[in-house]
Image (cartoon, rainbow, N blue to C red; front, side):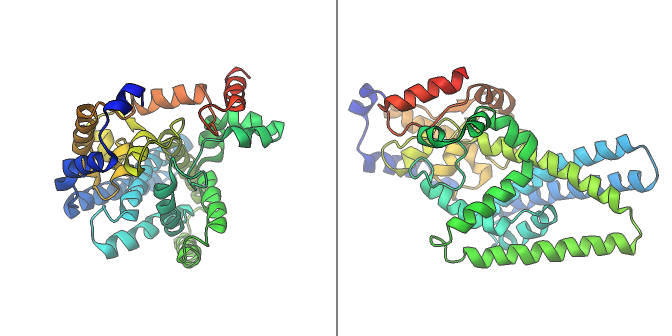
Length: 353
């Protein structure tokens, strides 16, 4: 914020009160809206899976089978994004549904969703505040300085490597690695890791049992699964990077920090529906109990509060593709402090290397 904005900004308690009042009527969860989204995307995923396997088992071209798998991966990715709402109990608000269903749709792809849900709570508490944030993707200048040269290369091309090479395997590995170091903060974490492990083994065993029972082509299953992993990884990694990269900052109190250290994306309403309101990520971070269908309205109300108090508006990127390309083309580091000379030097080197 500029000096002029700081001079005319309200007290923290007054601003927080205004922000809370602005969105007070948007916190009710519409169970049927969440259920409709979950069931629609689930039906599309299952229908595409069946159609793709009919093509594969019918001896049609390999190309059609792969195209079907790609289409399935896209639908599946948006279905999996419903799990983010479930983690916050804002998908349906039905505890049993938001607790059980994420595992059933995540375990086939080896995704430890219950472990993720645990450490995701720390992400909300630490984003922009504590560098131990388990979902932080941007490196600090100090980390870059201490890293070997091959990791400097990785940081410069991090977006491409994470999205197109590491994919969902990278997210799985990152979740498991973080969970091993964060157990002291989350008493339930070890239990949820065990539940994920059991769920993955049982579900994968059941799928292989069905394939053997129906004498299905195991190599076709492997190919189908790999294509799904690639597609899901691309969408999930892009989302993971875009939401916070380049915005790490602590601004005033917790709510303002979340509003300014998260990125919103200008997109079409149907894309916002598919993404479960995540294009309005600043609002979600400041008020995680607002259901996805209410986030667009909350965004405009909060922007109005900020404008009325002569504060900077929240970041609004112009589309997922363009914003991702722009950020990937200009890698940056988190400064240890605004006036740290080494951070300025290293950020310049990073852009020029």
